[in-house]
Image 1 (cartoon, rainbow, N blue to C red):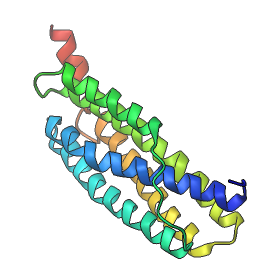
Image 2: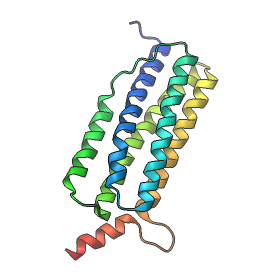
Image 3: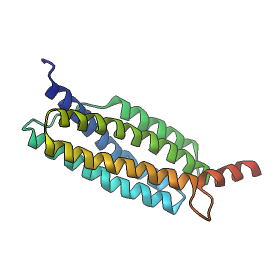
Image 4: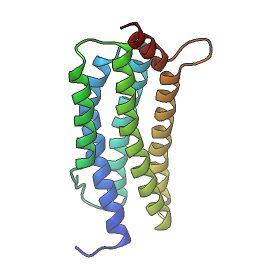
Length: 173
C-alpha cells in the first residue's frame, strides 16, 4: 500500500480502535480489583468514556468513508498483560494494589494521550476539522482521566492519598 498522509492517519485510527476495544475488555477486572471507592468510580467513568471513544472512532471511519479496519495494537496488549500480571500478584484488595492499578492505568492512559494527539494533529494538517474535533474530545477525556488518577494517588486536601496509605501499610510490616 502506498504511504500517504491519509494512510498514516488511518493506520493511527486502526491502532486506536484496537487499543480502545482491548481496554473496554480489560477495564472491568481493574475495577473489581480496586479497593478505593474513588478509584473504582474513576475507572468506571473512564470505561464509559472509552466506550464512547470506540463510537467516535467508528464515526471517524464513516466520515472518512473508509472501511473500519482494526489493526491489532500489540503495545496495548503488552500494557494490559502487565496490568493483569500485577493484579494476579495480589490476592486481596489493598491500597498497595490500588497504587499499582493507578500506575498501570496511567500507562494505558498515556498511550491514549500520545495516540490521540498524533491522530488529531494528522487530521488538523489534512484540514479534517470534524475528525480533528472528535479526536480532540477523546484526547481531552484521556487527559482528564489521567489527572483524576493522579489526584487519587496523591490525595486531596485534608486526606492522604493512596500512595501514602500504601507506604504506611508497607512500613507496618
